Image 1 (cartoon, rainbow, N blue to C red):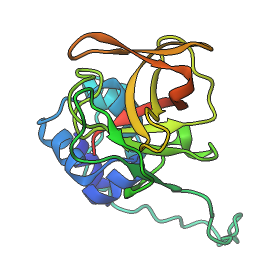
Image 2 (cartoon, rainbow, N blue to C red; image 1 turned 180 degrees about the vertical axis):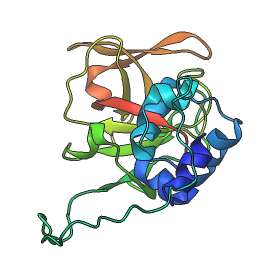
Image 3 (cartoon, rainbow, N blue to C red; image 1 turned 180 degrees about the horizontal axis):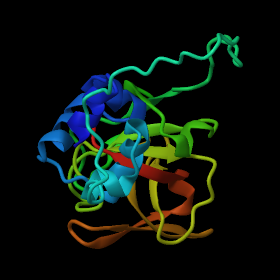
Length: 225
């Protein structure tokens, strides 16, 4: 259904991918069924294709599916009237792009050097597009599987308050002159003594002295690269 609706709206896979903040290969996988269409993906893609998430996931209600062939035009034979709308200038600010940080290979616990090097840029989803300083990171390894898979993109809102149970990206500096190491984990607590995070694979808690913590930022959502 995704392919039919996309083609009906005259969109390429790349155009649809950019509109929802993901990549063309991810749209291809969703269309072919190689990747399961989850509720989260349906809610992102449905509005771009003019349907609800429920219709995209479960199909049209009985006897209500539209024909994908365009109907013949209907000509209005009433007297001519002036249009009641005006074409204005191009709308700016839509489709803001944000940087994606990360690296192909991470450490034992999925950590990677956060050195400011941008892998590429991606269209920001609505949940972070208005946030000053929003950015994204590419997950490295499977330390947080099945929540996050290797190569998945996490969209980060650095302004949002973090609470227990949230997923976060933290930056840690273990040595005074050492590099910043970034971790994508589940937040447990952060106080004057330590930062405690949860990891899934292998299951364990990661603890860092508060003095080593550079930042703790909220992960708003994630999607495949």
